[in-house]
Length: 198
Figure 1 (cartoon, rainbow, N blue to C red):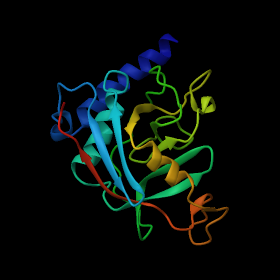
Figure 2: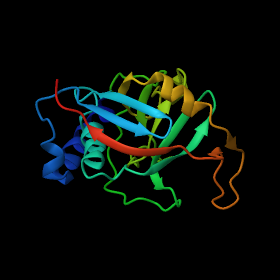
Figure 3: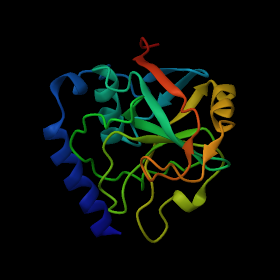
Figure 4: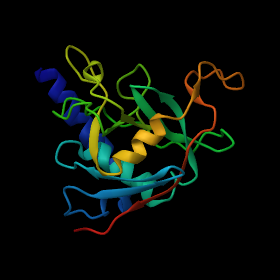
C-alpha cells in the first residue's frame, strides 16, 4: 500500500509540472467545478471532484478549456456498461493527445451509475483524453488488488440524456476501424463548456 501511495504522489508532482498554466488557473479555488456537455441527444452537466482526483480534473478541464472536445463523438456504447467518447472527431480522426496522467483510481470514488471516469489502455497510467460514463454500478472497474479506472466526477443533471445515449444501437464490429461496440449513428459531443463558479 505504501508503494502505491508513493507512486501516486510522485506522479502527482510530475504531472503538475507538465500542466499548462491556463489549466491550473481554471477556477483554482473551486473544489467542484462543473462542465456542461452539449450533445446531439441533450445536455449533461458533470460536477468534478478536485479533492479526490486533482490531476484527472485538471487534465479534463485543460481539454475543455481549449475546445478540444467540441465536435467529437461517442465512439463506444456498451449497453448496461459504459458510454465512451472524447477521442475522435466525426470523420473518425484521432484528436490531439496530451501527456499521459497518473492513475488516480485509488481515490475512493467508485464506478457507479452516472459517474464519469477516464478511459485507458492496459497500462494503468495511460489515460489522456478519452472518458466514459458508467451506465450502471461497475465494481469490476474499481481497484481491488490492482489499478482500476479513475472516477473524477458525477452527473449533476442530465441523467435522461445519458439514458438516451445508452439506447443508441451499436455494431458488434466496425469494419473500417476494427472497433467493437461502435454506434451505428455515433452521438456527437457538440460542445463542452466550463460553467461559472457557484
